[in-house]
Length: 597
Image (cartoon, one colour):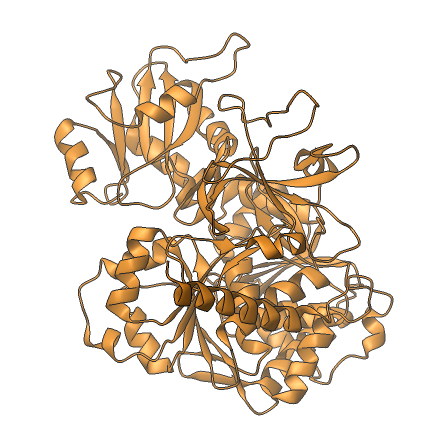
């Protein structure tokens, strides 16, 4: 890198960080300036600007706030108190943000449920959230009604949208509810360090956990990126990511909304319609995940992709091969790749477009960040400690687990944990570099180059990413093992050329012949679509350690290659809703991309 390129790199970093810090300086977990206070200020400032659009429907900031006020006043009329939780189970829709924003005005916490949840996973998330009521959109009602009937739950179920007979209609209830702002005293006594949202994340073990999102944390997410992309009132954020997730629902929404711009709400992502919608809506920004971008670069060229006005994109998981192709084909000037977790205290941001990097911490800025990379035992994934008993930092370009130093007095470095104290404690690592220090374990492997750029390597241990979602191997194994004829199941992720993340693979021992049509139907009812194993490996006996723990390292290395593995192998055919024998011919078709997973 030449001198002028190096100067440009540092200039971009410093100016972007200064702009970001300016947007974050007001956030204090010990203050009483809450998320709804900040959003109300934006409403008052940009009252007549367009705030949300969905198809032909448009809301100004004033109309958005009026809807939120109705939700708030409805909650009070229903008897919900500050500190209560209501679960929201809905696809993207015009009033999605208004619902949780309105509830926050009166101190009610909203649990944002993943729309892919079904059966036991959905019931679990509603239960652990402590929800006193559930709001579901019309498209997901059947799943909630099934859970309620099976569990015998007594919480009221409200439908947002066209409510069928016998279901409480939120839309009808809001029609007769005042649109005036509830008095701020309804949330008096709360601090920014208190919980405003619950978001669910797959941890390294078990069912999804409720990550506690405080006002301060949500404010940080909503303010972090606007400085880096210079967002303003003329911007329109195309939102195809789910609004229940922090990337879209907080980072993306906040980047537009808090600077006077608009959020263009799409129900779901469609690769074939994406650029047409970008042109139609006048979008200038969009939030991405890597898999979304991979879909777009693999679609045939369309005239709309040359007419769009998108100037910046923000997201994570953009792999280097897709990055270069995407940038050159669609000519988007600003790509801001970042790293973060809903519940975590580690945040990184790549503001200068270094291909493949998830962020950068130059030597002169290290004291302002809390990130450390440590060496792990490759078999146990536990930290390697030196003769002094402390963890060992990795060398340049050496992969290691990312940790975040916890400082409860600094809103940037807090770890607010989960609804379960036991789950919270599992993410803590103590006495890392000195006695008494405490760090958050991200569960992610990264490496750092000599210029301070960080690169994502992989997930640690039992959790892997597939279809831009975290998959818990234990949750999948528990569901799989309950199917008749299965005695032992070992679930892990395997790399597949041409795909981001790792595809789920289940090595199992069978008692008799397995009906794969029935197996698929069972898994589809028990697990989210992204968690259903893509590959199966039928073993005569499970491979375990001397302490009877499943071995995974060897299985991961062998992958799904029929030339390497003598056990029967199968691959998921989603269209046929079954598993097919994985022959050498089919294996080559997967590698070439002719057979899509």
